Image (cartoon, rainbow, N blue to C red; front, side, top):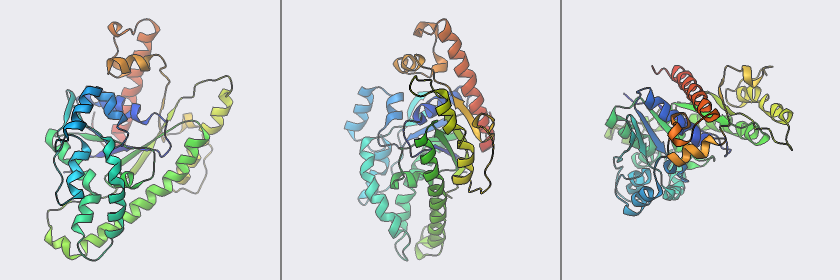
Length: 338
């Protein structure tokens, strides 16, 4: 049985994607769900949120097989095969496959095999490479009998992200309330649909080639990449950009999401705050963010000893309720009991 993969993706950066994954992973772990987090963003920001710099430097400099996601797939660039990951235990029920900035060097290799995977012969190697992220994260999840896999990727439409998305069962799209997020959404929807269709062609091609019979135990992801909704950042009021400017963009999201992502032709007249496809609106927690980063814990786990007193203590409890609610909504969408 394959463990469900949930990827948070927007090709527009700065929408709070990494912070969202970080907090949801901790929330699910607190609900006693076993979580594997795979950092497949070459910037490795999620890894730096979980691990201290000296530990990250150690993992990168040792170049031990399986120490980071990059070191799990690196042998594929030569004549080797995938290496099982060494999971970093962050807390009870919470495990990380660390990222690595060197992963960006894998982009060209994935682009090359994407084309060759539609050939007639010798398809095992290309399909092995294209599915390598899925293979690694499934190995990791099976190690700990995980309930869910969270994946973080960079804000682009490159070959690495394409290989991650074909490994994905469910997609959540984080958005900001601005023109750029809206435009990113317009680009993202058709791209997901295209990748899904092109991967299906490759699966059909694989099943009809000679290599298919030679590798009867070789499993591949289905490329489901089902969008389950979006998460919107709450706007912050600035003197030069009044609330009305944010509402202008945010209330266009429901129609654009349906048109671009769900491929629905009929526009809807609904506010983002009333949209059932909006999983949550994430608040700005302002001064709690650096406090949590300093303590290397989620906002909702801050204590008075960390400096969360007075109004901060109330905000901590608000954050806990908000992320618990979001966690339950997502769990229901993907069929996971919490």
